[in-house]
Image (tube, rainbow, N blue to C red; front, side, top):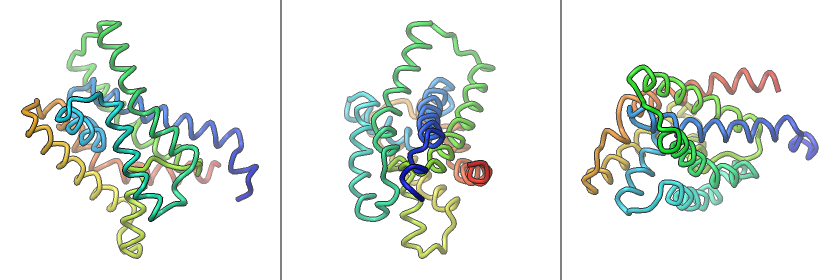
Amino acid sequence: MNHGKKYSARRIAMMLGGILLIGMCVASYRMSGFGVDPFSCMNLGISGFLGVSFGNWQLIANAVLLVVVWFTVRNCIGLGTVVNMVFVGYTADFLCWLFLEQMGLIVTMPLRICFLLAGMLFASLGCACYMVAEMGIAPYDSLAFIITKYAKEKISFRLARVASDLTVVAMGVAFCLMAHNNIWEIAGLGTIINACCNGPLIQFFRGRMEAWL
């Protein structure tokens, strides 16, 4: 792939759009009250335990994972990696603040279900967008590639993603329990759906976007 194609306007737009969708996904899951996506579950659990903001802890967690990615699947790092690390957590914090605190949105059960479905769609579509753009992916999303690499590709991407998702959910729940916080605010139906369906849906959208791009 030549440099001009790699940094074409279409790829940059896909990368930025995908990262925006991920921020919207995290906010949608949080507002649904059905549990958040797996990585956010871990970060909300740990940030609640440590008493720091979600956006700040997510940035720290991504920085730690970035070191692991640098020594394993360095080709996954790019401009999109940095943009994702910095903006997803803060975008989610901003949207929750805007809708819940500033606009005073009353989240009824039908609206919670809409947020849950929107979060699932935003998660898989957003990941697929910036993966196909090939401008770097989030450190956490690189974990599935690390697993497939060291399993010598005996494990598919979708199974590796499910495994990593379930692992971080367990970590988030453990820290939430240690902090004596309400576990249902971070883990629930939405978390289970995301952990089990996100990998296959990302693969589904990636196949169609790669053909289009």
